[in-house]
Image 1 (cartoon, rainbow, N blue to C red):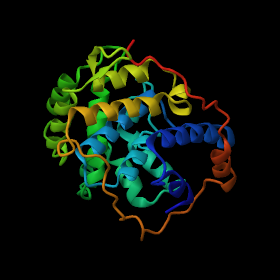
Image 2: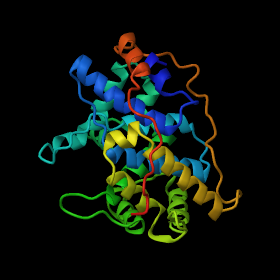
Image 3: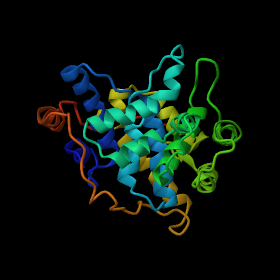
Image 4: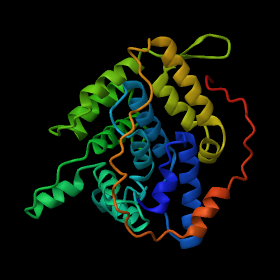
Length: 294
């Protein structure tokens, strides 16, 4: 495993710290190498959905690996509707880029399989694609589901129920995703949870739309370098625990050690840049009071 992957995939780091690290990594790559990686609020939203899905449904996957992949799998996405060709190539380009930074091959394969365009290209060339990784199916679900919930220039975001319908009938139609039944159960359970405001009243938004709203209403630096996501995760988790008993809502993914014996690819990310990421913590970490219910 490469040094940068080891640094990011530390089981002692929570998801909010990982988001902060990737945000700082984005700046370091731009300043030190003139390279761009795609990391915006949509990535934060989809990664938070993945966190909830893994934690609340107790999926037998390496939680740390999936969340790190979720933060990075769209790194070469282009936020430009005019560049339609990138839609078919960004996942594979991103996987190649991550491998160049020192991420090991299976991790990069998981990131590439966030969508199935590379599989289609292989079939066009008469090649049969390799079997999909289990972790890739989680990335695929949250990428499509989160995408349907997000607002677009041409439409408003869908409700969780309708996003699930659109995902099944449009983007995942005819595709076999091993976690889809569990994801159905997850969305159904989340629709039973409403967050309370400081005065104890209920809000109209349930937990998944409220997650989207909190992310929409804060800029990316406040989300990744401040306390917004830390506080929101605590509120969300406490509400889940209150709603469901411990048999119905299990917490904490099961660690998978499949990466321990994998040889690292060469690392092009300098030790100086990694050190800069470790010490670049100038943002004010004082707790602020955020009104999640406005």
